[in-house]
Image (cartoon, rainbow, N blue to C red; front, top):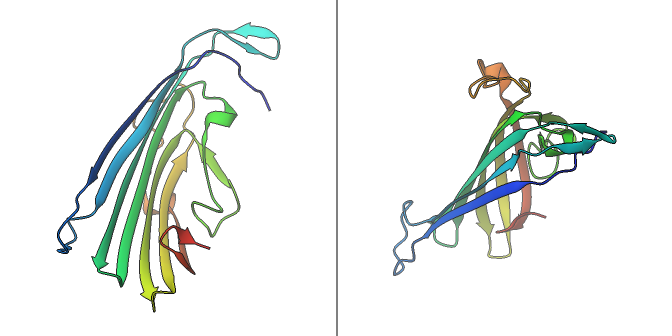
Length: 177
């Protein structure tokens, strides 16, 4: 596997919203956050002891929403990750999904590419305040349209382009254990 070395320029942004109420809980009173990273490699780099002019850009945005639908009984969490890579994105910088953390029904890092859309939802059902029954749903598209592709190339064009995984488990508010 080729490893790229070079100077990176990164910009990281984070926006959050957390509403605390006086015991009143509605679906709008949850915790909402957006964060992401813009990474640019715009310098000559060393690839296998040769000087190549390799340039790439990666833009990633994560959206998180969590809420307690019925106090101490049912909670909901949603995570969305959207990413796009342009140019000569090295293998170690491509997006990977599958296995623990995303698309649990597939092998670890089974899919990789430079276009990613991932939506994960979790429902937590409290079981006697001891543990939670957790239902997970993961929906994902991932593709690798090539280095000279446009912004919208590689997006899903049919329902068959979207991967899906359902899971059930027990655990705390942090997830399945």
